[in-house]
Length: 100
Image (cartoon, rainbow, N blue to C red):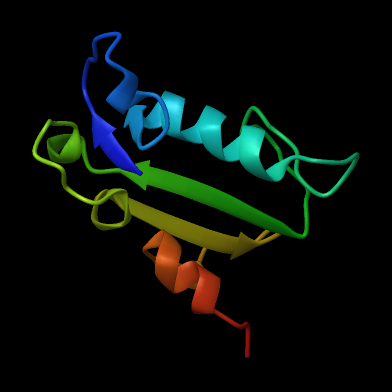
């Protein structure tokens, strides 16, 4: 997925591109949310899940330069009620992460 800032109605932009972080998040949810439970949207206020995820987009990556989304996004994972993250890194590194 490539992050861009602005798009036209060209067919090439339909599947391989996300028009900003909001579009990327919506595409991800549409792809992974297939049944009841497991994944929820939260306002970020007083969340009490086992793990809380913060997704941070580097603003300079919103361009037409084809920068891979993985290099533009940092994910922080915290256990409930903890300040220090147990993981901080790219989405691809998160897929490799196992809490130890």
